Figure 1 (cartoon, rainbow, N blue to C red):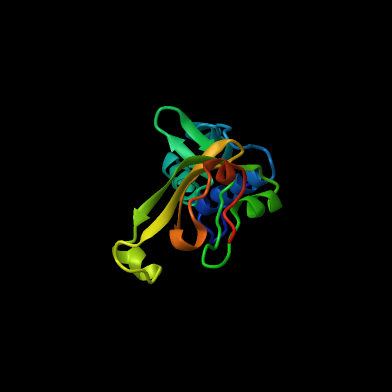
Figure 2 (cartoon, rainbow, N blue to C red; figure 1 turned 90 degrees about the horizontal axis):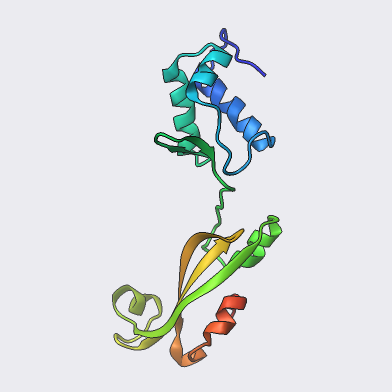
Amino acid sequence: MGLDKSSPIPLYYQLKEIIRQEIEGGLWGPGDCLPAEKEFCEKYGLSRATVRQALADLEQSGLVERRQGKGTFVRGPKVEEDLLGFYSFSREMRAKGLRPSSKMISIDRVPALGRLANLFQANAGEMLVRILRLRLLEDEPLFLEKTYLPSGCYGLLQPEELSATPVFF
């Protein structure tokens, strides 16, 4: 696959698409280091500025990560989810062929103040259950999940329950 220097499509964009296709095609996997900028310059007859623009675009899209003095590395799968409706992290990740897990950080009671009081239509100071879990994907930390539940309805849940199973009510 090569570049078409007579095309109206900018060269950096053509290179970016070549690299994207190679990553998506499995030539490089998560954690792999891409060739150095100089190698891309030589292989495709491009200036270093053009190669840097292609890599910057790939980094901005989340496909690669540039580490100063180390190189450009392929990032793991990008996870995007719509959290406006009912959502099960574990179910969604398994459906994508990934291995999710959770680690309980804490479970405690907190007063409903400000925004939380409004969201739960609770009186200021009414107690809520706050659950903090570290969500992992392929044993790598992905995000910290903070869940609030009305404590009057559901009581205080046990941490061992929440490490193994999602919160469903």
